[in-house]
Image 1 (cartoon, rainbow, N blue to C red):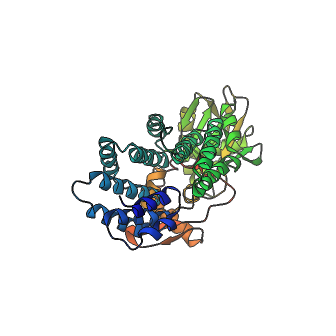
Image 2 (cartoon, rainbow, N blue to C red; image 1 turned 45 degrees about the horizontal axis):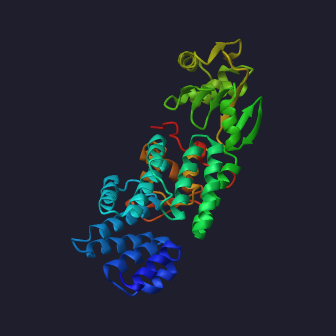
Length: 406
């Protein structure tokens, strides 16, 4: 490897893409093409970056398997950053295996981290945590430690373990300072904001107030019966009943929870659960059926009893009932929460991350675009959606699958 290629590679490792381009911008050999591709990716031109990396992979000779594998890993990182979550996992795994086989442990570890970050994005937390536990960043540069701790913090936040998340972010900040890469420090600072931004709203006794993530964690550890409208479950300590696939039942549970310790009239329940303005006999009959189903679902946690006016929710062991609502009132809040990371997403990637159908996501995007809250660029499969970060709330509690609309 000649001196210019070496200097360009060092510039990229230090987060200086312009310095790297000054050295290899006019060269078309395979190594230069690969470095130019990585530099363009760091500058945000992902289309040009992918083209350069693919050209470099084709230019490398048949005996340069490691170089081609590195190009593939770089392309996978671009796919991850541009939220192309459908990028083939097997191709990245094959590239990682090639790097490990040839002793390139640094880039093999980088490939592993890309796999973990993808799992985190699509909510497969157990797999992500298991794979992360097998990685030791200590033999590698501080930038790897930063990435490792950022992923660890992300998993901890999604699991509502804020103490673990703060410790991981502190370690990430220290490693980022040692790495001396401004972009990494900015990423750590952005991740840290999540812990100091409202994650949900607490509804109790008619009052509403925002909650930080650690307050939500404390709420889940309390003896209260919590109707969780962020994850569509009803919980009490470690006992959780999911109503994510039963939107009518959850609407009834939420309405009853918001009214506790009082009851809710049948007219109100019909309006909230079925969208009906007036409770006729058919609505009342359906309400009785759905309340019976809710009663069976929640029998271990609470009793749903009939009153003179309607129905009431009475916890069996808990001393109170609280409702945890989404931080903003918007039917498409889950889509907005994903887009709040500032990256551009395809509708298919959004559907994968939210665990719902692409048609449901597309309807939400069309609605948000009509109101000017999101914008798209590109066409067909190249179409991407994005929005500036939504101020005032964090996304952590909104990433699980929403209520099905199909």
